[in-house]
Amino acid sequence: MNGLLPLGLSILLTTLAQLSLRAALVRLPAMATWVSAPTALFGTAGLLLALGILCYGLSLLAWLAALARLPLGRAYAALGLSYVFVHLGAAWLPGAAESFTPWKTLGVALVVAGVALVGGPRSGAAPTLRNTL
Image 1 (cartoon, helix red, strand yellow):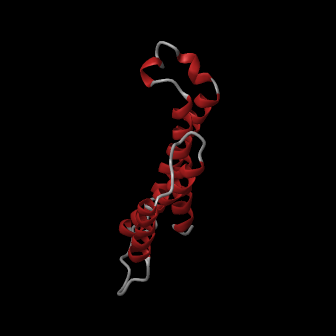
Image 2 (cartoon, rainbow, N blue to C red):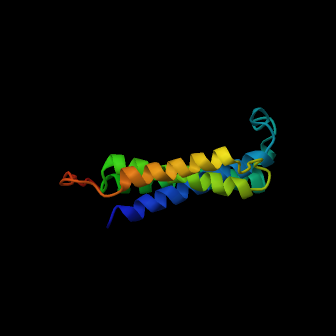
Image 3 (cartoon, rainbow, N blue to C red):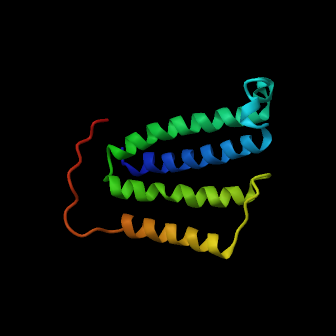
């Protein structure tokens, strides 16, 4: 299996995790009340919280598979795309209180440019990776 598939899956799952957790937390009461009033965790917000945690766990597994097949520097740079997708998703997420501004848009563009520079074509021979998965 090519390392790009698990890398892409890790990016997608990390993005879904962040957006799910944010959607849950704007619906839930303050975390200090969760122990005294746990019923708030049994509704839609609780499901979104569980989904976010599940996505993070699955993202970790996909990330491990990607690291076994790709150089760390390139994989980690590509993981930065999750910042772009979270920013874009949060701007449309109800209750997230996110917005697009010229500075935020410039920041997102710089992340994309950085990923392209680090993950782009490289000169010289690629190092041999020892696949443990």
